[in-house]
Length: 301
Image (tube, rainbow, N blue to C red; front, side):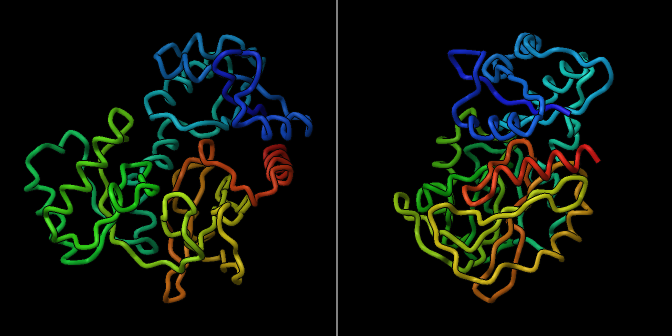
């Protein structure tokens, strides 16, 4: 097994500084680490992006740990590594299942806020289809995101809508979101019922509410690691019972993925979203050494 990290933008021989700590943990544990030029990959030069990686004599699993990429870039990377006898732990199909919210919604809908979505091709200056869709929410508050990310740090301007029937506010927030995402928009726009979560504090810069949330990592549908989600908040509450979420994880069509969960003001725990485990960050509170030890032991067994 190998671990694949992105290289520094200016020096392909060293790891991106954002993943330096993880790179060192993996290397110190005796895991074979490789470097990828993410910039070349995203520019469409998949073959050049992996040229420094040595082929394997026998088929070997490789796990990417790095910044997000769109499914088409992941598929290109998957295909180039496969030529070197290296198999990314998640197939392109599995990557999309974890990375794009609509792909996992059916599997988690009984444990997550009601959601609807519209592909980017359907978005236009004609808002009638959007308002028609939002009638399903009545006057409830909603949040918007694309298939991968929200702009939650721009809470009032590009994320939260207090009343789904307020057409002017819907168009204002939706316009802001689409314009600010620009070419980085993933798939389309998701409209989600806003459920009030138990707040720990507010973000010191954006004012966004910081909720009682945890991130869970799963490997082969077994819990690999879990930790408090927000670095900026102080957690003083009893940790959640993870058994219901471990059961739900069996439904997800992916080998390595994350599940973010949060506590509501009523005291219930809900799923916020599923993510691909290769492009989901480790929270500050997660023990990196233990994470990579667990990963190594599980993969070797």
